[in-house]
Image (tube, rainbow, N blue to C red):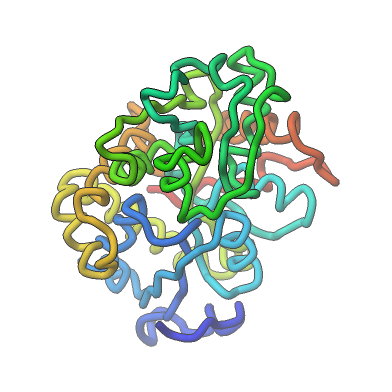
Length: 317
């Protein structure tokens, strides 16, 4: 893995002179939900756009946003809600250039035999998640939408990599997890089945993860940004069409991940990313505004966030 570069170095190589080496950071770890990045890398889609891509392991959406803002990564994969907080509280000059999770992916997972079948069943229970997880941060919005008392739910902090184990061993009644993580959770809890309470089923409608870039890159290297988006979405389309092949590709790069888990996550990403009648990645300004409104309602922002500061259109063809 090449060393990280500051922003000026990231964009100093003109595409015409050869492939520009750029770092791309995931939101958290390496998971099957990231398979399309590896498809685009393995099949040469990035190279065709003049990009020599390194895929970095992220430590959460906030971390990914900071890496892109500092120039440690040219592009990232991060949650829109986290980006609203970064813009409003720290004036971080980063924007979303394509949306991936067009439908809220947040959910609470519980063992099927736990008695947790409806949102109301969460009252009086203990849930585990990382401190900065969007599942945990947006729980007040979910509770209000679902008509339950959020103060009657206790949250404990756990390491992200240990969440499935926490659920399987009964150290918490439920865990926060994205819907795309269900195959990984089910593998950890087998033979016990799991139940998922999805935030989207309570009527919440906001954007979550997407591709992000710095304002400097958007302004000074728009063709590079457009090329990265184009290649990534091409990898995504192919992963959705042939999930088994995409899983095999990612497994070659990340051998610790079960191909069956990767394939399962790819299929769930497709459900979140596909919007009928719209191309993959397209940003809807109305949905962007709704996302900003949800975050502004439940979190303190030092400064208001204009929807135009959260996302920029024109990079999805």
